[in-house]
Amino acid sequence: MIVQNYFKERIYFNEKWYSFQKDHSISYPKGGNNNNSIIEDESYWYQHRLNCIKFLLTSFCEEKVFFDIGGGNGLICQEMQKHNFDCVLIEPSKDGVINAYNRQVDQIIQSSWLNLKPVENSFENIGAFDVIEHVKDDFEFVKSIQYALKKNGIFISTVPALNLLWTKADTKAGHFRRYNLTEYINLLSEAGFTILYSTYLFMFLVPAIFIGKKMIGQNLPEDFKNTNSRRLQSIQHMAKRSNESLQIKLIDRFINFELQRIKRHKTIPLGSSCLVIAEKK
Image (cartoon, rainbow, N blue to C red; front, top):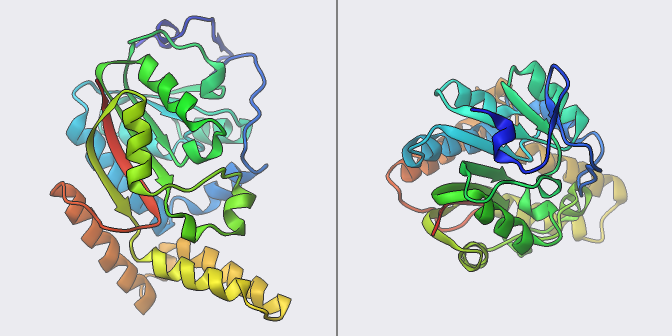
């Protein structure tokens, strides 16, 4: 695969990765990718999301060429390379690009997607995982992906779900919105996609986040609120190191239940994330 053939303008190679010489400003916290790199290899949240994505990519993608937009530290590209996918990470942050290079992701472009000018009808498969909520104009973003994909090309994505779960963590992370599944499906359909499969993920996190949010919002001492906020974040990204605890065993049961449903192409009725695989009409 020749990466340059997918883009109208020249991208420059610096012996380690490609770069497109434009501003890479995005709605994402400074240092976010470095913070994620500490936890994502052991966080049940990242690993469950990865396993669900891996199953759907290997099931639906006939051509094993995959572009991961805003793919951070290259966790998904690294995994899909093990399954013989030819992967390209597109990531605007320097930290993410360096971390992905250290993960031995084969092909990396340092740029935001909207700064690039893709060749129409040229891309085989594109992913954007917890990216679209960081984009102010989400329709423009998904429409640009539809433009780039070949006919019957695959777009797989995740977004945070349910406005009732909105917390200060969303604001801090640079999110513009959360979605319900119907709303997100409608966005993709209006942009010219046919939905092949859709579901919620992380059903068990909905009550945990909602109750935690309510407790943080109570008229309680500030130190209690801060402790509870940290606990809420810890529940969402608990590392697997303490895998003998009852809490981890329960989480393992929940995520195994969800993965088995996805493998049978069944849906999960509620969750803190949406997962959708769509095809260009």
